[in-house]
Image (cartoon, rainbow, N blue to C red; front, side, top):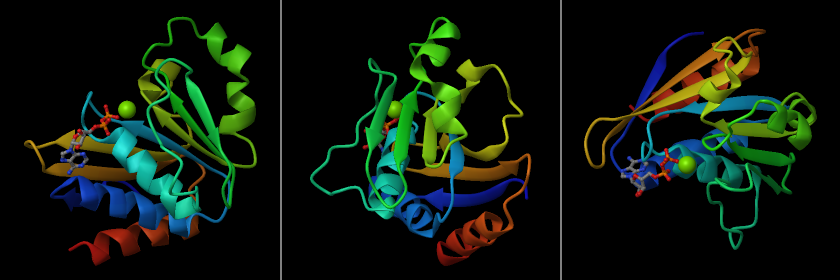
Length: 160
Ligand SMILES: Nc1ncnc2c1ncn2[C@@H]1O[C@H](COP(=O)(O)OP(=O)(O)O)[C@@H](O)[C@H]1O
Ligand SMILES: [Mg+2]
């Protein structure tokens, strides 16, 4: 499955699309969130967290300085922001592989820092079209997860 696209007209719509995806996640998933600063990666991540059942009182913000935040939900959620990563060894210190390929859902902002564009997982590219409009492009790379492909199709259809 490649290049499924959905449009978002404002922040709340990105939040809802993320939330729907979070609701549909049933197994460990690695989600790589691409896009420029301000594209909406963290908004989308917040939606996923809500959909997975992270308490609505819990703020979901970019873990810019801590590199990773861990949330308890239906599936454990590990939210990474690798923007400030300077040395790949920091990933080892963080136990990155254990979280990214473990039993939970891992969300990675700035996956470019991993240096591997072929990391298997759900790649989500948020593109800023204007102040409020975004294009969200999903592509599953590596061992394709059939149920996830169906969920993404459903999300895109609902949003037509
Ligand atoms: N359609 C939209 N989707 C997501 N964010 C939007 C949208 N329209 C406007 N915004 C604004 O863009 C910003 C996105 O911020 P954020 O999610 O932190 O970006 P990133 O994590 O990609 O740097 C927020 O200020 C949000 O209010
Ligand atoms: Mg962010």
